[in-house]
Amino acid sequence: MRVVVGLSGGVDSSVTAHLLQAEGHEVIGLFMRNWNDESVTINNECPWIDDANDAMLVANHLGIPFQVMDLSAEYKERIVDYMFAEYAAGRTPNPDVLCNREVKFDLFLEAALKLGAEAVATGHYCRKVTDDQGVHHLHAGKDGNKDQSYFLCQLNQEQLGHALFPVGELDKPQVRQIAADIRLPTADKKDSQGLCFIGKVRLPDFLQQQLAVKRGDIVEIEADHEVFQREGDDLATRAQAFPLRPDMGMVVGQHDGAHFFTVGQRKGLQVGGKPEPLFVIGTCVDTNTVFVGQGDRHPGLYRTALKLESPHWVNPAAAFDGPDGQALGLRIRYRQPLQEGRLVCGSDGEWYMDFDTPQRGIAAGQFAAWHGGEHGDEVLGSAVIAG
Image (cartoon, rainbow, N blue to C red; front, side, top):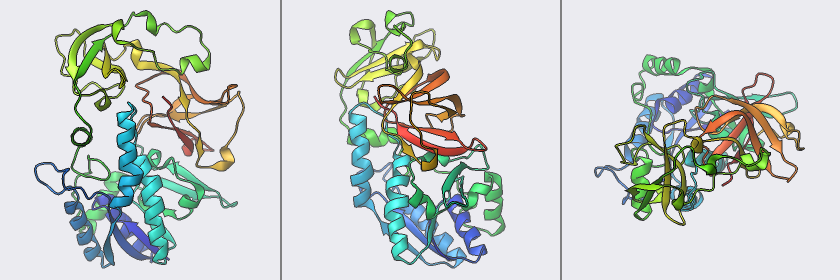
């Protein structure tokens, strides 16, 4: 069948195109240009042109059609503007998850279908299984160190129905070896560490060019402060963030904007002279305050429950409601090992994750995903962590 591959200029999507071609499919390579703001550069380098050139070299090497697709206007509207609004509100969004839902498997998929393609393929390390009833199941990739199913936790059944993930059955060394064997130009290229839409530009550098610098206080709160003594153990109470105020602690430094920080962060505080490292335990954009505590065991870093916004079910057949909940594997960030706990629709009608052990660095705006199924590695659904 005709398949459009999202060639990113990396080794994973390059091998994806090769594997599909080897299976006899008609493969078309498309590079998505998602950013078109030349004011955001590092060391005067164009942040995406190198990747586009690498993608073109791969297409030429494989002998497949190739073109660049400009989605910059749509990407700014759907992803970038949303991301800045979330950071400005003191939340921590995940642009990679949104990129997959809103761009790669929406706008990009729509363009592929117009080209007569039956499917789109990406270099994600995950697997899709379709059962006899036609339900598509999203599973973790075979390589546990590279599993990227978390980034696809917002896809729906229609999107999954058109998706292919050829490298999901391989581990990274196998992908590298295949690339070397067929002499792909990207065989030795390092994995990208930048933003999904800008490439070489790191998130802190990007935010500082887009959000205003605003000096404020860094306030340290002692671990034995009464604010960390929960009153009551009901689910809704345990899911609440600690109500921190500037008068609860001592000013120990200054920062350039509370919106640049997230719970659990250690780097960037630039406050020394403490017996233990300082970690961000909370922020308040209204007072422009960053709250910190000493040590990675500070009680302000941990909660045993969190509140979710409306759940999205990747597998609708797994959906449920009711206060008893279900025991599932829970995840609140990429690469986090699955945590034991329950997904619960509370008596108040709100959705919660209730963990067996305290969780560190719960950040509002991030995506939480839940896993289950026969082998326990299926992504059943996800939701945004509420503030």
